[in-house]
Image (cartoon, rainbow, N blue to C red; front, side, top):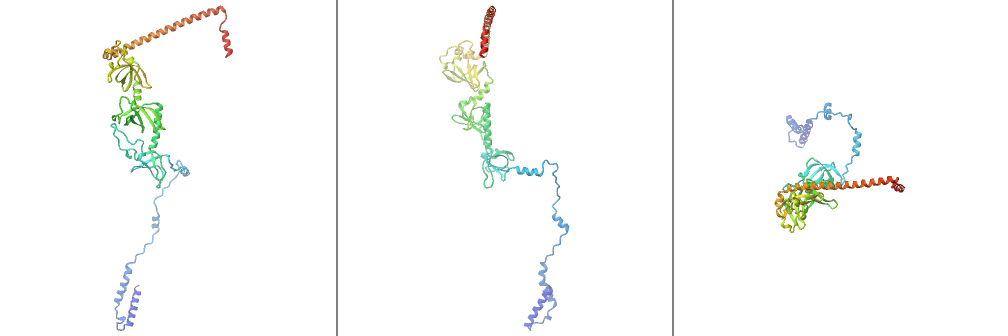
Length: 425
């Protein structure tokens, strides 16, 4: 490179000398100047020159291609082979159709619902309105808690969900838990109706006709006439009441329940004829008085108040009056109780003249009444026994007379009749 530059300089100087004779000759230029010019021209090329890359060795090539130790696996001892696995994958279907019920795991809470992994190509979405059949829970004071998605489903928990939509443009499906719970609630309610069992349910509202109760997440109507010892007021909201079904109609989505039937059945199981109970007069009618006994309503007929004739019932009993009665009859199926106070009178007419005396001596009078009833029962049994024995003696006399006549005649008078019956049969 230096030789080329130097040659170029000499040629250039020579050319200049040929056309400019006044310039000094080439020999008058110092050699050091030529060398410095050549070095100055060649120096930039020397600085930009890069060193050549070293040639990789065989060890370097092996090191670059090495991917770590290789694990040696064997299918020996496994319960299936690769062919079995391929067959299982081929048999597995991943179709998700509307109304299908699948398993899903809640993976994330989202705005207005949560994300559920059901094994599809995209996670499904569970809206908060479809997260539960019971959207709000009611406290004892009637207050309601928030129906946020966090209070309805738990994170990382698996649920049965129903697909309720087709895939959108992102391949996402909408799912529901509420619809599964709704169908199951009707199954449970129909079973309870068939078994006619007593169950508890909270009251969530009242109206002019009665109250609204929540039964397995479904709203049931409780008529005011079937409330035991209470009125359908705001104080009833939040209370848990024992109930029984009066009407169940799934087609019309209609549920009617009764609190009185449940209370009566529970309390009447411990009641029997002849028991002394304490009640309060609730209403007076021309034919008698209605007495409330532990949430149940019993009828004290006007003929069962006293042995003496009653001209004006309001002069004997008053609404709100407390009294003692004897149970003389009860209908557990319909929840009806028949009461009597005349059976507790020490003397006939005491209910008209001194009712306090009747209530004070109620237990003693009831004991005497039971003894008198037991004596009358035994007397009736003895009389019936005597009648039966008398009939038996009469039949024996008739039989003995027939035997004597038969022996005298020598033949059975019914033999021909028996033969005729046999021939007819």
